[in-house]
Length: 99
View 1: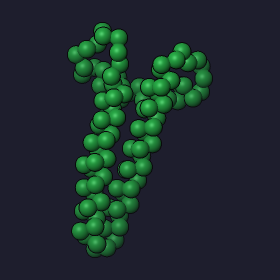
View 2 (view 1 turned 135 degrees about the horizontal axis):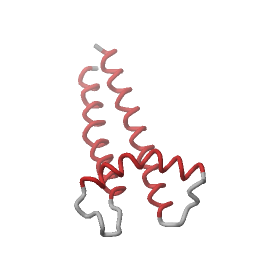
View 3 (view 1 turned 180 degrees about the horizontal axis):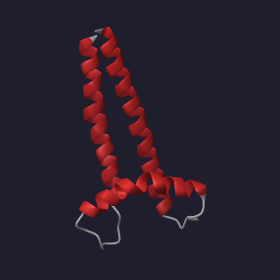
View 4 (view 1 turned 120 degrees about the vertical axis):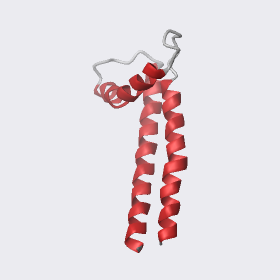
């Protein structure tokens, strides 16, 4: 059973690192949106391609479309924090019980 416990522990660590990396990408996208970035810059294009599908789906569900302030990055960060707190810790604790 220790193999399953180690597998769950490794999965929880990979999910934790992936969520942390994506949170930093969301923060970078939000910071870049405060200035007028060059849309042809490869970094700006990468940040846009990685974050826009999730931002778009959140914007679709929000009823505050024409307010001028985009709060979708804040909602994404809150979702990431929830997933890190709930999912990652649950997997880690499950792995420790199996070990």
